[in-house]
Length: 488
Image 1 (cartoon, rainbow, N blue to C red):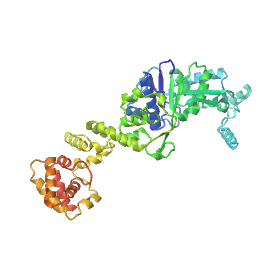
Image 2 (cartoon, helix red, strand yellow):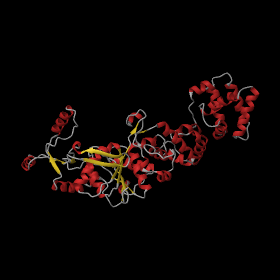
Image 3 (tube, rainbow, N blue to C red):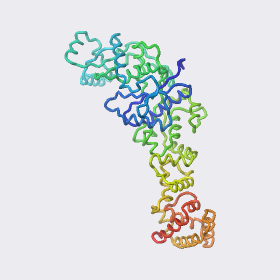
Image 4 (cartoon, helix red, strand yellow):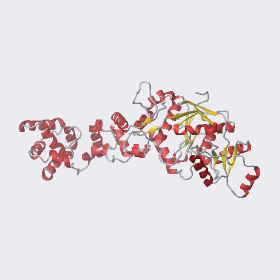
């Protein structure tokens, strides 16, 4: 750790929904800052002009806020801005990058490159044919002043490339991976400013991190190869402070390949819409590449903050296990009050909780099924036959429970007993069902199953008698009548 006040950042490109890998990076930076009293900054790296969209910026805001990851500085929905180190959109900082690029030109640390895309492609193919790294040849590095003038006169628009050192090594003391070194001879004279005047990622983020006084950069290990390039920009600009870097392990799918769409959902909003709780996703993401010494699995937010440490981050890739995620969500759902579950299910338009009568019925139905719910998306299915007048009957359940020699007699007897039942409570309902089984010399299940299927349309559900009590006497009798007339 360095002695400066900790400042970290999450700097996504707004080119789609927030991927779980990006969300994990945001979470680790946020936990790191909260653990050590630092500042967490959100910066939008929107220099990909073709792909960056306002919709994607909105998805980043929405996903982080849903997860409960609050930022201390950066843009907010509605145009509000937190902090005084902005602008926090890179496309609003073009004059800043231009100023630093001009300084590098003046100091002779960069050069203008006029190579066309066709020339660059030919260079790459030639090097690859020789089984060499397809880096830029340096063709324009030693152009004379007259050659530059001639190209400018011809109207050619250059890019600006950094003069990378050709000897020695660039060393990184990585917070996760330990010491890593790169041979400078293998580093490319990469582009800092495109012909359009827009900076590349590796230049803009160095300028931004310097001006925003970023002390630690935690990001995915796919950025490791960018780090020596960025360190050379720090040195070329004469910046006296370089952040500490930590590169987080890759996230793999269950088959060992990089997590992608073929493994299922990959964005935070997809998991939200599938019925996962934000607490679950935060907890699970924290365990992708980090662990406590005692391998604790379930954490609340404060617990994560107090126990997070960068030295417990793993170098090995993390495997995204959907079965473990589902188990974890069930654990969180069981700990969540029914009222909150209903509110969250309503927010993602799974159920309609308007109206006091319907709300109370849904609340009671979810309470009956609370222990069995694993996803918020389970709620509509598990409650629909309580709130709908017409229900759907499962054909297999009907065949097994109602198309039998005794089903009609069972339902007729139960209907008669329920009609005469004054106190419609689950103890009394259980009593009349068990007494009927004894009278008829039947097993309890031979009574219970026809009654369940006739009244709910399905073979499984909550406790039968609690379910009947919640449905109410009129509904139970109506559905038994329907079953007798249409299904038995």
